Length: 286
Image (cartoon, rainbow, N blue to C red):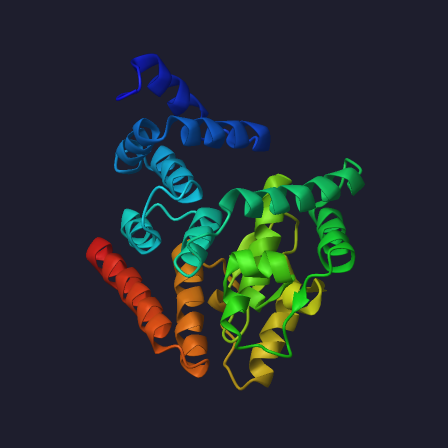
């Protein structure tokens, strides 16, 4: 089969952004079965001007190992269509080409499914976060890797999901991905020297520290932490962090940690990603 029919293309386009795990699994299996025609279809969509569909097509290309991981992540950076889960998995795949994206997503689906079992509606955002805390940190055992903080694996989403330990930023990403599956709109908060998750859905914002097993903090407490570190607290320090900056910060961490781990090649690779983020931002903000 050399080319997909028009009806096949239309069907696939209608399903690309479907959030259902069974649909994603079935679609990935069908693309794998079709091989080259599916590869070409996904490439066409990934390079098209429909940004949301392009993101999903790129994710399927990655999941099916249809493309080069480093080129994929560079294309993602240049696309300006920054979606946290896809970006985090694309970043991790630059190190582990055999990364099983479907397995990572199934793990996140499974964690969210367990949370869903425990949530009794109506529940407030804070109550739902308490359930996420119970499942992530007590049932699944996720924790901050305080013993080996600079281990590069702490910054790679697939390794964090497998080893159940990581940095503040990657544990926050896991938290955000689980919350998203529950329909809970939380925000990444990159304060100087640390990373937490923010909730702005109630009268007063509150923050969750996944590195500290989900401890709840209010705005004043976070600003006091900064003051104790001799950093002049500013309200923007606890504002949501754009996805671009979250992923760029992950790359910065990997530059430093690969250097300390004696892997200069990987350090240079992630330094080039940081430069790509900066250059793309400059081009599109001028």
